[in-house]
Image (cartoon, rainbow, N blue to C red; front, top):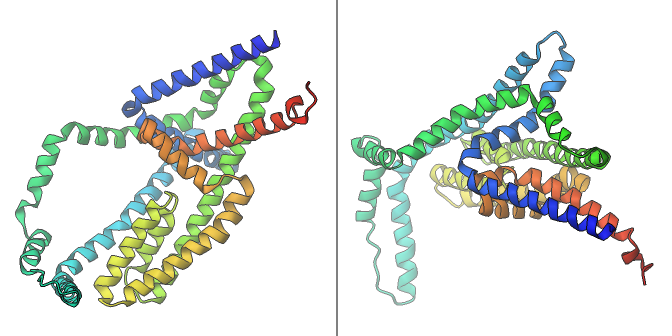
Amino acid sequence: MLTNTAAKRLTLWLGVAMVVALLLWVLGPVLVPFAVAAVLAYALHPAVLRLHQGAPWLPHVACVILVEMLALLAVLGVLLLLVPILTREVPLLQQQLPFMLDRLALFFNTLLSKYGWQLTLDVATLKAQLLTYLSANRGDWMDPLVASLKLGGSFALAALGNLILIPVVLFYLLKDWDRWVLHLVQWVPLHWRPAYDSFMQECDDVLGQYLRGQILVMFALSIFYAIGLTLFGLDLALPIGVFTGLAVCVPYLGFGVGLMLALLAGLLQFASLKAIVMVAVVFGAGQLIESFWLTPKWVGERIGLHPLAVIFALLALGQLFGFVGVLVALPASAVILVALRRMRDQYMSSKLYQGLEA
């Protein structure tokens, strides 16, 4: 009888999981703004509670608006860090490109001649084409943009709609977060409430510690990269360093983008091996500090959520559910981690593991 009941419960939960997975897969594009807003609401809800507790005279709605505005300004500030990088690097690239191509052609022609290959790289045509497309005075730069907007008008319209919808959904989720959570809890059977509350509390603790630790790592790396690049004399050390530090929240992608920006800026400014040495020293040291000290100290040791598990969750859920899967990868990782811990504890305390069954 107990085995039959356990089988029914397992079948029920598997059915629920399959239905949820099917809905995420089918409604993926529609759920994007709601998933983004839900992740942001989960992260910002404690800030709303603390602000309301610290200023009880401030209405709850005002606390929600203030926290949401600060969060949106922070995201906008990170994106604006790319503006001085692009506005400075594109003209420098236009100026330095002929010299860099000449040196590159000389290097490859010399290298090929050593092996007896009589092949001369003609860079004149390449320089002319690249300078034409990098010219800031070309009027037909708008033609590809307009054509892409015409061809992908629905995509552009959807992206614009999501940018408008996300703050609206975020406001309502933050405003009624406790009520939404209460509605979800009411669906849990009463005799499951203690186990459910304990499980969700542990998931919340794991995810909260991960987010807090990751934020500390981001700020520490932002300071490190900015100071390290400044010591080498890079003009764009502050925006590139801060952007790289904040972008490490995206595993490997953020670090790679920051490295390429620093390498490009260094080559255009120094036009020597100093740029490669700068990137190797600063980013190599930053990666070592992050991997062997910051992340283990502030993230890994406290929660046991290994970076490889996060990367695997990002790739797997992104492959299955697209952008929505990437958004829910971190919460899903925390839930899976807690579930595996409890399954391990139950297994080790079972009669099967202890050898008490015949």
